[in-house]
Image 1: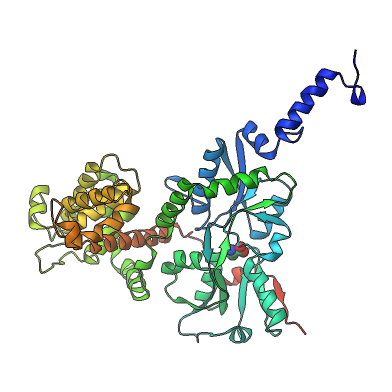
Image 2: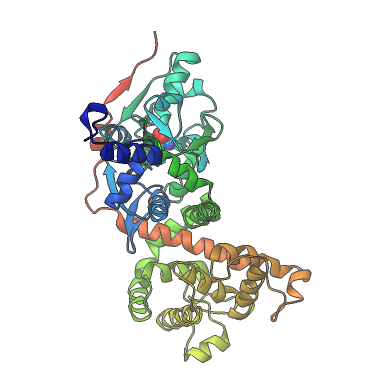
Length: 475
Ligand code: GLU
């Protein structure tokens, strides 16, 4: 028998050489291993901008994006939740996850330890302070106050750089144990003067902290990307970049931006303060009515409460000059159709309004949630006919009439003659339903958040004790 290299049979040698020629290596690549196992493991953080659970299960911008990547590879996604940013990198380093999707900023320091994929979002790093406590306007002002940031964050790295290059007197504390929400809470509670958070995080959380504001931005917009361990095998990293280069991924990114951040500008400071006050003072009066209607018509009661606030600020005897009335602002005709005898009776108004909204939602067959509910709300505001016109315009413009993101673009066009002259129902004040839906989503988010606050809260003192490391000034 012919014996070749290291005594291998000719046949085995040929097979190995073929494999080598085909794959470039005898060992399967990381991507091949993941595909053979059928599972992709990601590490993330539990936060409103990354990953959390709500009544529909696992959600979050990073989670949904990673899930799309896993689908793209034809495998299941498994999520490992790290307790802190520091742990994200430890888990990655010890190969307990194939990649990290955790709102990570690309920094030069991190690039020494990990390899980033193409960025999919840009954020600024914002210095947040409490209104009325003197707005810092520069780094030098920060040196005079008490500043806390997440340990291991890009913010901490930035401060180090600033301390080295610009402001040696700067000091701050870092914590591994507090999340972004906790940090904001400490500023709101006057326990610390400033913190630094990413703009997307602050956008999302600002409504819950109306007393906080952005003082200034530390740097120009920074790229956020997924991180992969450095290794010679870059098959997964390459697959991720291929994924980001695909058109459907770009569409998904736009959809995710709409889903998570699309409704955020609608609540300003005064609006947020007023809403929280009113929720405190009035909501308890109507809560049971909302809950009853929600059970009956299969809504989350907090969504109905949000509609009630948007309609009348929870005033049972509200009336507009156009003749709509009551807490849910029903027109005379709609009330009649719904069998509501007294529109000023809050119970009847809430039940009638909720039934009407459920009817509208039912008519929107073929539209998936949550878009279906947003469209039903738009129809509640502007009328089903106008909504249908806008969906038609969306389709004609190459959009998807079942996607709220596209219909929301089309609705305002109903104010322009060149669009509405071809529609069935004509002109409509199309900007209004868009704003209407955004407001309701915002109110709804706040009510859900309020509800989720634990009964036994950690005291501010307990939280403060978690701020361990103090970074001293450079001498
Ligand atoms: N993008 C920031 C980072 O990468 C997130 C910081 C934070 O959420 O605390 O460090």
